[in-house]
Image (tube, rainbow, N blue to C red):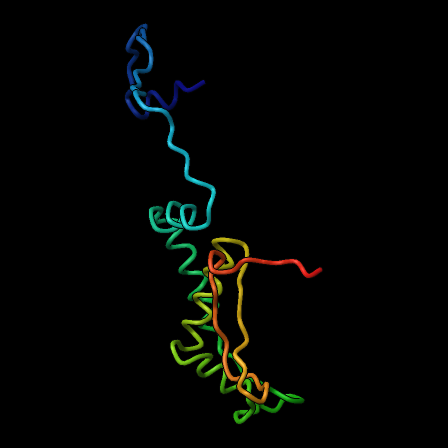
Length: 140
């Protein structure tokens, strides 16, 4: 069936080949990653260049989307939400905020955002938390 391939490539028969088996040295037992967020994120994100690149490309792509607040199709530049989009908190830009949030969602499946309120209860900022910084408690 592959005679044409052998002719094109020029492969000649080597005759019978005998394998002595696959040699593998396994002196140690497998080392499993602990089942906590920090360990899994470190192994899967920091030590795996493919996962690192994929998550960063997705996060940067999403954070690069231009956000606007519109009412009936008219852009509202002075809307309070635009202030949050420009600067969600004192430590980061909107782009950095979204990159961080999307990265947490992709790594752990969850993204947590805290609303920062002033003394009057008005929304003045947003803060991203990683999964390991949050513990859920039931009410009741």
